[in-house]
Length: 81
Image (cartoon, rainbow, N blue to C red; front, side, top):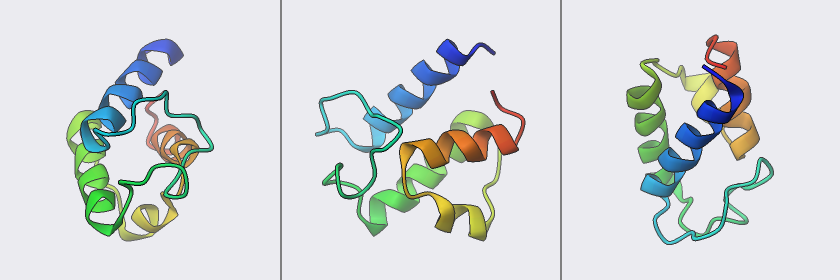
């Protein structure tokens, strides 16, 4: 998978979880920049990542998800790049 395709998949995934955010999701975006990123949508995000990429994030990885860049880092750790 190319980096561009991965980026498109991540952007679509984020748009499906955080529907009111109309801008591009930058790597630095987190709960401070995305108003919908609360505890419930954090769990929705984790489930969406698991479903989209066929992985199961561990508890520690769920806690590490604080920005869009963290999502990319964790996907790379699972050899999705």
